[in-house]
Length: 203
Ligand SMILES: CC(C)(COP(=O)(O)OP(=O)(O)OC[C@H]1O[C@@H](n2cnc3c(N)ncnc32)[C@H](O)[C@@H]1OP(=O)(O)O)[C@@H](O)C(=O)NCCC(=O)NCCS
Image 1 (tube, rainbow, N blue to C red):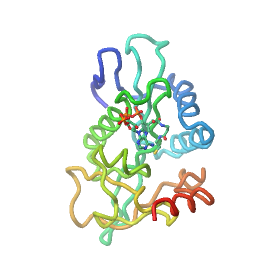
Image 2 (image 1 turned 60 degrees about the horizontal axis):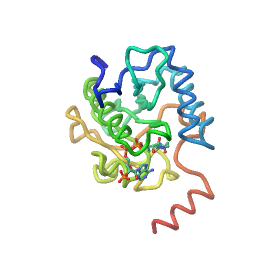
Image 3 (image 1 turned 45 degrees about the vertical axis):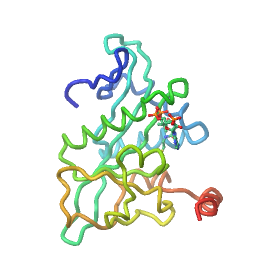
Image 4 (image 1 turned 90 degrees about the vertical axis):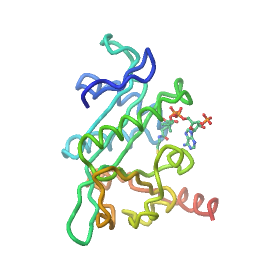
């Protein structure tokens, strides 16, 4: 992204630099707890495979090299398998905020910065999997409401969400195809018993 996005006086959202990698991995590990190592593997696989399109960090103080990374969000290239042709889209994953700074608007600010970056890149849509109460209040709609199909039946229907961007055209609909990194790290959707539990809870 171009200019760093001001979030609050003491927090900036900017493109990740190589030297932030260790702090980003530590943040993701902390935010995702038990799933942390798997999500760190996903980030590494996205990076190595060339699928990563943006990696943004929220930092305490832009001028301080030792500043901690408080939040992070990644955008990667996926496709919508439309009838006419494959359409490049973006997949937002993962989104992390350090536990000590959660519930202060940082996740919301990272989502807004990611959307801004996706528009700047000319993407027609950003897809994600996640809690619909959280993302629904922050500009995301159910993918099915716009005719999109889930990349796997193991992504709970309501968790499959999209935000359409100015470059989107009505014919750009179909199944979302994830890049290989999501499959090689087995980070697509949920697996039993969690999947079955969630389905029972949301029936
Ligand atoms: C999800 C996450 C990024 C939100 O970041 P955040 O900076 O705390 O979010 P915000 O401050 O912008 O928004 C906080 C609000 O969202 C709600 N919220 C946070 N996580 C939520 C979730 N998983 N489901 C529903 N609501 C959630 C909070 O209750 C809070 O609402 P309130 O202010 O009415 O109490 C952060 O909790 C996190 O890193 N979690 C662990 C990793 C994770 O689960 N990432 C998302 C994977 S889909």
